[in-house]
Amino acid sequence: MPEADSVAGLGREEASIRVFMANRPDYPLTGPAGQLLPANGTLIENINRECGNGWRKVFNVYAKWVFALSESAGQTRGISSWQQYRDELLLTEQGSTALWFEAPEHFNPARLNIVMGKTFAGTLGLTDSVEWLTADFAVCLRRSLIVTPYFDYRQLTNEKIGFLNHLIRSRPTLLKQAMGRQT
Image 1 (spheres, helix red, strand yellow):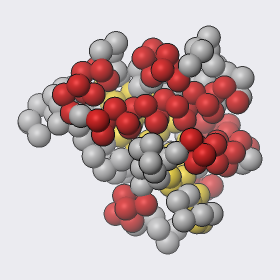
Image 2 (cartoon, helix red, strand yellow):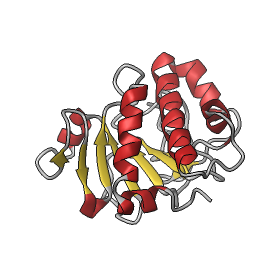
Image 3 (cartoon, one colour):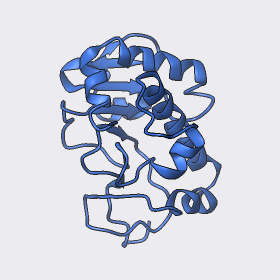
Image 4 (tube, helix red, strand yellow):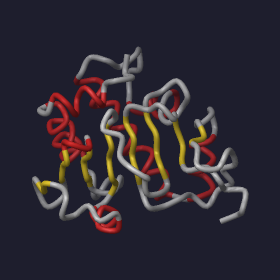
């Protein structure tokens, strides 16, 4: 990675939905060290073009999931599709999402924290401190934390997005954290 890449991730610092992953795009993301860079109108598109299909899948699955969750809560903010959500709100200063490219110092229980992938959860030492509900999903309500499959169509399928949203909706604390900024 170029030395200029100092940001910790993309999105809004105060995001109600915080996703953590082990990867960082091979793309110049400059800004204050350790902080998030809000995605402007072309940043996601540029990362997709320069960094390949894997990043397109991450952003698309993230948008599909959050749009479906917002839609089920009746809080779509005038957005009519996950594609429109991706293009207009995902990881922006106006949105409610963040994508961190590194391990957190701690999980803020006032936010919904998603750890992307069982392998990354293991790297963070979480596999024994969460409750595994299925082979793919685990929760720690004290931390408002869910471990999910990696954001890829084959791993976090539409069916699993539905399960994830049911999981969030069925636990009022998690739903409250997720919808905190979805007004």
